[in-house]
Image 1 (tube, rainbow, N blue to C red):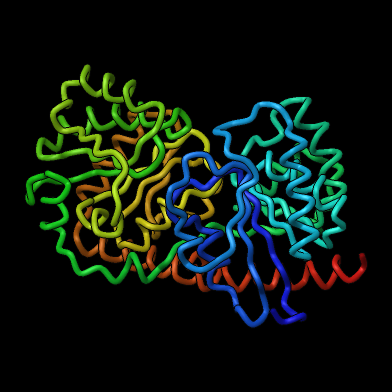
Image 2: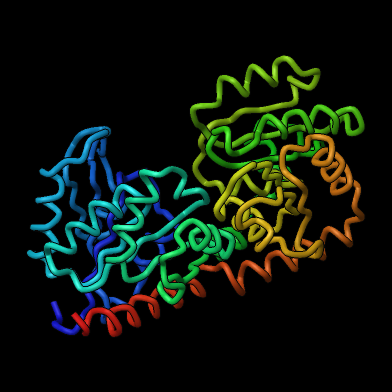
Length: 381
């Protein structure tokens, strides 16, 4: 290992399968400049880790599914790892890893501590406010995924110097979603839908914050005006049974399809005519960026970082959250747009993702953030 490499450790609660946006960026950092280790608080249920298969060092600190109390055993293991691997930057994702990472880095004298914030409302109670007050004093860089998330951090944590906060947008593998050869008709067949059907679709975790009850209600209105319409829901989660029951109680139940988690999402997106996000709370979902990169006209709600992505009608349509009727109107309007107008939206949306949210663009920002943080904070320590 070259002595001049910056040694980075990414700390996550657990391995969730696949490759996240940030991991994908880090995996392709300049190997001549960076050495990367991945650390997980828990390795419960892990049979195969794609990151480890790619040749990177992967470490698990315990094998419990979930720990509700602070584990000193986990903390001591992390301190030992940071010292043994002489980590220069520990990059913590979400609150629990930030707690462990900040304490461990303090004892291990790790030069730079980074905390990544993926959503809104992360300072939601007094306990979290006190914890952040203590942690943020030690943290060198705070990374929100959107400007809206940054403002939420500032509003909830008035004591944090703003020069510590750097927005790093979520990103997507642009070429993966644009260079797809499957036809729309074939993609619809894979989804189990007739090639001549008009398909609205969404992708994401089936949780209350995704506002899917409003999407189902909106679709029931849409179906009355567009009889050939179908709604495809790709993803899984704790709210699935409740959502299926709601769909069953609507007159359009036979046109709502819960297909669960699917691989090769870049192919399945081509079977959608319009992509919809009905969330009531968000940071910056990659699903929207993926759909835009895939050339699917998009509708989303005005929450979190979504208005930063679709900041104009030339990139798609944005509506108020928790309003099924307004969402239905937008869906009908988008479905009835002339093909020329839809083509313009697709093109401009793809260009926006390529120029701002592609892995290549955001990776350069992350690399500069690491280098600047190491120079500014690491050398001083």
